[in-house]
Image 1 (cartoon, rainbow, N blue to C red):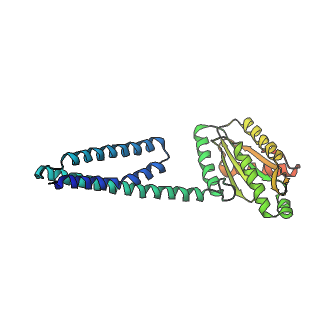
Image 2 (image 1 turned 120 degrees about the vertical axis):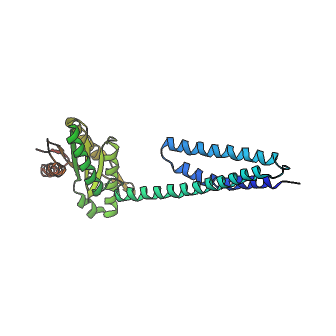
Image 3 (image 1 turned 120 degrees about the horizontal axis):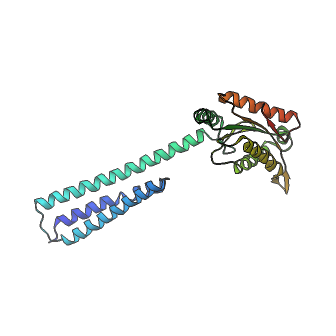
Length: 269
């Protein structure tokens, strides 16, 4: 006669199996390599426990159920249930975190270009100014604008204008360091926050961006392509200067570059 003990042990294994899929999902959602390995190790430990419990159930097929065996069965069933509940809650929590991260990214991202938006620019500029005050490290700001962009929209339509803007945004991003923050703050105006870089190097990078954009050709269909140029204003933070003043000087330098003929870098006074 088969004992009830192995049946309940196998039931515990079945309950624990319900935790595998949620834990696998949590492992896939984890972005930190250490956390990912940790979840994978937990899954391996669970698999080992289920294997051992299955072996025990097979060995106890004809073993009579006494008080000690009954207590072990209760522990197995409760433990499996707790693990399964934990795994399901972990998956729900991980999914909530992922959703919140996506919402946060959307809140700080420009939908057309994928750059940061004005909100991100304001927050990051405040942070970098505070860090520059604390460390004494240089902080530079570049404000750029697409030359004659209204003419592009009027001639080819706003859809083509969006394509041009996206290509320029991609070109700008390709020339940036990981420490830099690039944001579209409205229309065709883009700003770049450049912390901890020598001002002369930052100015050279601004001119390299100008040249890179001027050399690109944006395909618009039917074998046609259009070119564009940008004007840039460049400013480096002065001692005790705040973010608003730094932006105003860089923006004024941009308008100087436009007034002087466009397709150039204007340096702030």
